[in-house]
Amino acid sequence: MNASSPNKVPHILFLFSDTGGGHRSAATAIIGALEAEFPGQATWEMLDFFKHYAPPPFDTAPDTYAPMAQIPDLWELGFIASNQRITARAIQRVLWPYVRKAVARLIAEHPCDMLLSVHPIINTPLLRGLPKDRPPYLVVVTDMVSTHQWWYTPQADLTIVPTEEARQRGISLGLDPKRMHVVGLPIARQFAAPMAKPQARNKLELPQDIPLVLMVSGGEGMGPLEETVRAIINQRVPVGMVIITGKNADLKARLESLDFPYPAAIRGFVDNMPDYMQACDVIITKAGPGTISEAFTAGLPILLYSKMPGQEDGNVDYVVNHEAGVWMDDPAGVAETLQRWIDNPVEMRKFSQNSLNLARPDSSKIIAQTAMAMLGRYPFEQIHYYDQS
Ligand code: UDP
Image 1 (cartoon, rainbow, N blue to C red):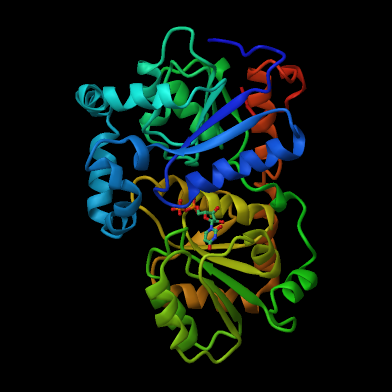
Image 2 (image 1 turned 90 degrees about the horizontal axis):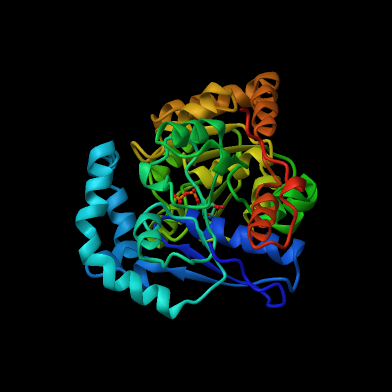
């Protein structure tokens, strides 16, 4: 590992890809924390390595991710097949001759003092291609519990995970426990300093006098969101709906043509999710790790209606086992549960409190401190991790 010169402002290369919204959100959140906590003390760039360096056909991954992920069986098959101890390594080995040149080009074209990866796929090949006196390498895992093996690379200097479950998995796969820390999933620092509910509703031009349910489906607008909205309309659950369709413009247009019995606001991709979470009373969402972690900070009871099989199974278990919410993949069942929560404020408050108990609003700050510590610019002893053993 090569420490940067103490007089130079260090440059951090963030490795991510737009396969889902979570990797970009995580990188942006850490950058926000670096800007706030260490102003002027580091520079950075974000690199979508799939788009710019992966050989064809993998360079189209950011565009093909959403359509592929809409076929759950295919996704699950790919996840399970690639996530076995033997296959996970074999795939990386087989692909190495194919990606080696691209890895060399990436390294040559992006000199830096530190690499910070928020994606599982790049770590093994990149660490293999880097020279011995390479800069420090930090992996920030952005899946909560059912983490793919590719996240865990023994050659990485440190691996940050969102939960103790994810740390134990890393240990079981041979990582040094001293080089793994539980911090939480990186979320934007704005989630740590929320606005009061009435203020958030005013700002977003939402009604004050009705419970509001926030409906989201990841950055891409995936899962049976439309059917779920229709079920809530059909059962006339007395809630206002705030529906965020992310990048899915067709879904937005279809929802705008529906007849809502109560107030409804339909938005495309929003860049102020903290305000939306604060303005609402319940969240109905796909089991995306980013959205779930953000909902914890707002103390929202969570109704999970869809998941990416394999990859997001553990997220569902985590929410359900901690009683921060429920899993309900039947649209009519979602509407019934929502009605029950509206009728039973005590039950809803219990889920809300449990959700808040799981919040890690300072996660991005801790990751920023860790990155600076690895660069020799912050004392490791002052960092508070959540490791249990
Ligand atoms: N998101 C956003 N604006 C939107 C929709 C989603 O900022 O309009 C963010 C959301 O707050 C979260 C991320 O996109 O940080 C989605 O990540 P998640 O892990 O929940 O799901 P993914 O899209 O990666 O499957």
